Image 1 (spheres, rainbow, N blue to C red):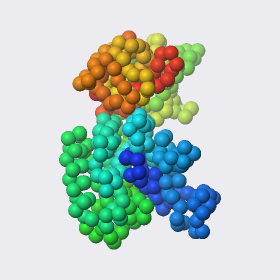
Image 2 (image 1 turned 135 degrees about the vertical axis):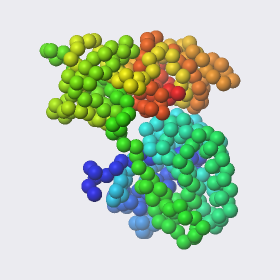
Image 3 (image 1 turned 180 degrees about the vertical axis):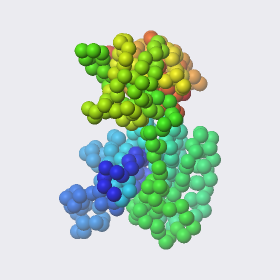
Image 4 (image 1 turned 60 degrees about the vertical axis):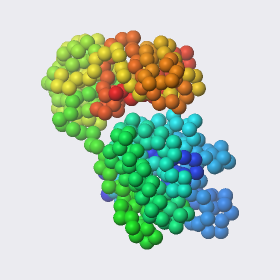
Length: 406
């Protein structure tokens, strides 16, 4: 199968410091042949190894920053790529420290599968629970819990079963649905890319098999509601052309749709894709739309159908992950960016919080937000594109928080 026809699966990894995230990713990259010989030679030289394929630290394949190598930790979101016969993969390797929770939120926001590592000697920790809650919040389709370092406890089934029972109970509490637990040794590759004979009691397949068996949700869904957000307005002699990506459903020439918070009814006159006129477009396609009516439509406006319209309001209930050292404060104005739309907004209320008017770095809180103007938006469950946003500092355009609309 050629690269163009392979399915793309987006992964992210999370866990505590020293749980072995980088080693696990290094193992996947190494065993899939994604690492070039010159890199392997360089890593072998770093470890003064006499052999090419042994005795170097697999985590060096992912911990590319000098500070990470010196400290032995991952401090940034590192993106790595590999492929098998049937799939292409993008892995977001996210930091384990509490102070880098915001990096994990960013890395997880558009991923299909979460790989959460647990050190079998340490068990489930508060960070494990925090990472799992973020996966639940972001509606990650599948969660794989990699119980690592099984070799250090002589592949004890009882220890794995205890951790499994505790985690599955917690997963049910927070609403995780598709959860798989795998005992493995990232260092040795056991149950990562090959089945080991040392754990005959486990029959759930390898980590690579679990991620390869996942079927990403197809963008195209004939029955789902039509969504299109204007990313660019192209003025022409006759009328404007609106460029963007069709994020949900389908749309056809001659179809009547609604535009923006004003819910103006218009008709699709022309659809252009890759410089060609087409009769119908589907989710995931970059398109240009021309309307029969001459109306004023701005960047960020949403086109939709009346069957299942978005929410039209200036009040948003959301969950925020605060990413700035400058605390979030109620009634302070920020830019809210929702896709290509940017409007002024403020946090009106922080729900269930000890400090009722402040949000600190890395906190994840439920909030009520009010925008200065009425906008169109979706629940994150329906649309990640129109159901997630960031808050931006008005003074310096720094990103302060990321949120999902509930």
